Each structure stands twice: as structure tokens, then as C-alpha cells.
Image 1: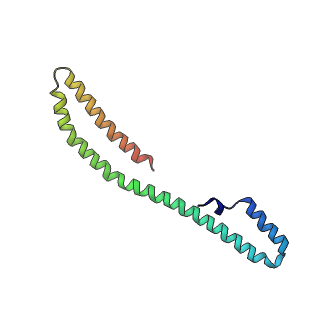
Image 2: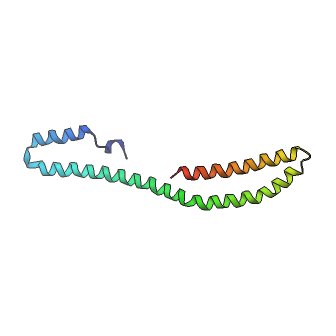
Image 3: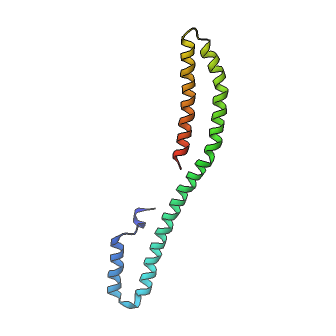
Length: 119
């Protein structure tokens, strides 16, 4: 919404001053005009809020399938990562596998947390 479309105290004062100058014969027109501006401002604010909520709802709706795909891919990737890590040698293989699995778990947890933060 443009800055000049925002209602402020000065605009209300201008309407009241105009009413004083024109007298009570133009009260209905002044009130209708000001009411239209208020209504337009409220409608614009409601529309903006609805758009924000629609965006959040779309993001939340798509989070479930994305999380499922990420889980499946992580499970598929973990098999070769485990095999490669354990083939690294004596003591280093187990450490490499633990680090690799911690990374996979971290990615999944971070994605799940990010998906839930939009609620």
C-alpha cells in the first residue's frame, strides 16, 4: 500500500475542518468520503494479511512431501556412505560413518525445523 494512501490524523483533521467551512449541508458527503477511505484502507490491509496467510499455507502444505522425499533420499544415500566410510580402514572408518550419519540427521532435522517455523 502506498504511503499516500495511508490514513492518518491529519486527514481526519482536514475532514473536520472542511465540515466547519462547508457547514452541516455537506456532512453526509464528507462522512461517506472519509468512510470510503477507511474502508479501502481496511480492505487493503486485510488483503495483504490474507496473502501472507495463503503463502504460509502453501509453504506448509508442500513441506510434508518435501520432507518425505528428503527422508527417502537420505535413506538411499546412507547405504553407500556407510559402505564407503567403513571401508576407510581400522579406526577411522567408524568415525567417518558416525560423522556422515550425523550430517544426514542434521540435514533432516534442519529441514523439519525450517518447515515447522512457518506455522
